Length: 229
Image (cartoon, rainbow, N blue to C red; front, side, top):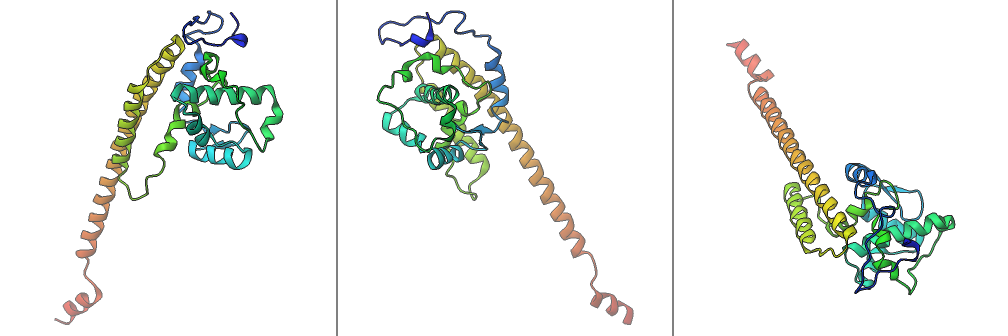
């Protein structure tokens, strides 16, 4: 069965063939390892961004496609958002002129949102597929406690993953990889938290040593006063 003509029926689901889906596909491993460190590529052009929020702002301003608004209007769930991202990337690959588009909208036909073909990354390394939901957590201020923010994001992310109800083999596989990646993120955040605390402790120790040194250093008035006596 070819994915080109595939549409999932709500009552009948055909499992992907071996040629269409390989659970040992190395692209999944590459995606997990690189998602934390890779720049995020625009959905249309070659521009790279360090955050999903910046990327989506660019898409809205430069390509006339508002991902956040589209997601809300179509009431897309997590898997449908992934399908949407991969669908757009595939459209750009098929039609390179879209890289310079100033306006883009989803057609009335949205059958692709239920097509498991678009659960598989179109780009070999596409960290956007994991971090696109971070746009909901980008609005905390610089005065917020970093540890508190990390814990909040972790709790929110874990809760959202628990809410997902995969119904197809690809969705189950994707959720499993997301959980693995999430654990790696948690481990990395724990290490970062430890390093941050150590740096802060070192800075405080250095500051205190400097203050003690200044407090025990006689000033000129004291030196001259001692000389006169």
